[in-house]
Length: 270
Image (tube, rainbow, N blue to C red; front, side):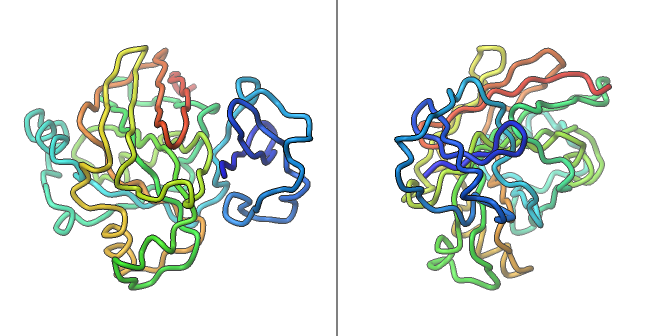
């Protein structure tokens, strides 16, 4: 099932190019994407065209936004070559550790990216994102995926520099999540998901999660050894090669056959 939030905090189920409004059924649920179930007679309802709705983050208020650095070999190579973040040249997740992003940085595709610090390089980073559905503390790798509610696409927007990762990646609107949550039953193997990003119509990033150095299960095992993962926590799994600078006026298109497509516009922060 594909569950979205749209317009004025409405909740919908996505089928093809249509959105069925199920806000009434989701009433009272703090995070409908985690608890909503199939709605009987859905196809008999009047639907909205997907192209006519404004997509918000499918997760309204995660307790934590976690992220994995340096998790694709080719991305490590391009970072080493360009040296765009001096002072953070640790190329092993176990040594670098994970990092946290401010929850206040979270937006949906329709809200776009409000770019600050135009004198500094700021990159797009498309990623597979895991949404936790069941509390996980010190879980084994073999059981890790049973704690997943579903998956999304994410953009981890990054100002390059020598400051701490969490600081440079937590600017308002610099965490984009969407276009909806695809429930885990539709993604039997998160290690076989292709993700892609186009910038103004040109392909910048195109890779498979089969290239992840640490797969989803290992990331969850590692993270949960340090702290409890709670339902609704959002986990960015790392970006592949091809990151490049963004500028106001850019149109970003993140897509996946398994997870859908989201269009995100970049503007200058006012």
